[in-house]
Length: 127
Image (tube, rainbow, N blue to C red; front, side, top):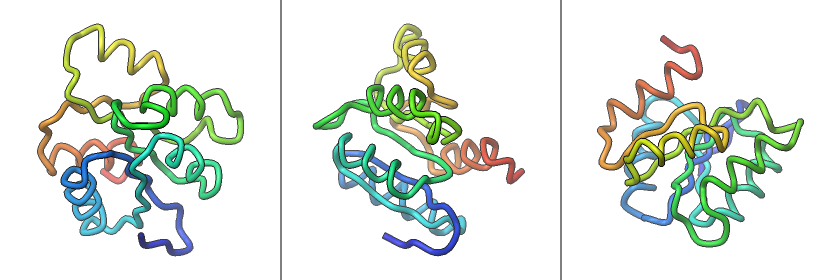
C-alpha cells in the first residue's frame, strides 16, 4: 500500500490475482493505491482516506461492492468519490443495478489493463 500526500485510489477485490493486476497497473500509471479484500474494509478505508476513486468488486465478503457504493453515495462527505464496479456480471440488468447503486463506470471481468487505465483516466480527467 503506497500512500503519499495525494488522494489514493482504493482497489477492493477478494481475488488476490485481480487485486495484484489492478494495483500494479495503477501504480505504474502513477497512482497511489490502497487495497482491501472485504467490502466492510473497503468502506472503512474510504471513510478514513477519502480516495479519489474506489474500484469495487461486486462480489466480496462482508459488504458487496453494490452495498459499498450505496453507502459512499449516501454519505455527503464521500459522495464525490468516483466509483468503478468490477464484476463478472454482464447482463444488462446487472449493469443497470450497478449504475443505480452509484457507479460512475462498470467494467466486466475479464477486462484488459488498458481498458481499466483508460476508464480511470477518463473519470479523473487525465486525458
